[in-house]
Length: 163
Image 1: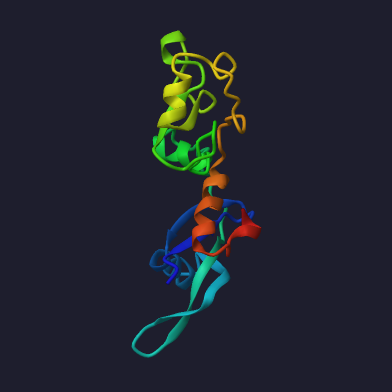
Image 2: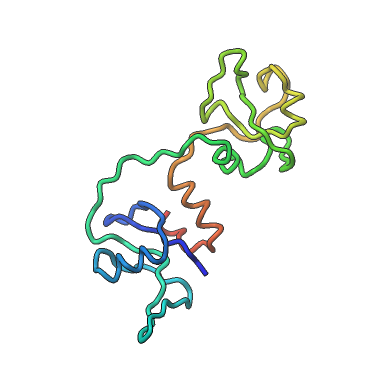
């Protein structure tokens, strides 16, 4: 059963993800409208049956502060598709500073990549150019919708057209 619901702002921009229960309450209290139902799933009370929401849209526009993506180990792994950015393997993953910390490299989205232990050791205290180890793709700071899209792929791509 799909336990997450995509909440859209009044202008159809993605705002957040909430539980089915919270989404149903928002729809039931007429604070939002159901845009898409979960395929064939229903919510049941003692006497009634209701379609289960998958995507809802708020009836009023909500000013939300910019949602950045937190710089965490797991989020860097997600951004890099859980693959070493030097050789492409998915085993024994670690983080690697493109410009090493000892040489003034910062702990930022554009200086951190996913690397396997073997490549990280081989690269050592060098930059990828100095170690002759090119990156598979250039690191970037991901957007909030990119991470919602990642969550969508685990839930069956029901949200794709809204992200």
